[in-house]
Length: 151
Image: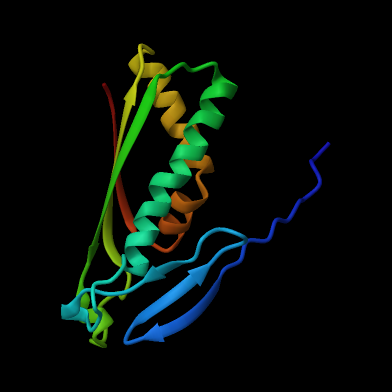
């Protein structure tokens, strides 16, 4: 029998401050800002929205890897991530035919484990299948190069 669909709402509020800086609030957490570097019209007072997107990929994997690892009985002692998004600013500046979002994303996972390469590949495939942020990027047609390595 198929499981009933369950919907979950996520939301954020934003308030423009000045220039291209916006303050964001989510639930009852401390507010944070988004800005742009000076060369893109900002004051470089906070990370950019796209920097938050690449950070979200790290954070989402920080949720999904432990969750899936527990399901698979996969043991590890630590994980670190690095995500790099490549942006062509011509699109942001209005040039037709140039994407305004990432041209490509590189995502590195370093996991401390004694598990075999086969088990690590099993974990990787299942996490990639279920990671909402990764799949959002892929569904947007963004090339995502992922590399997992053991430490």
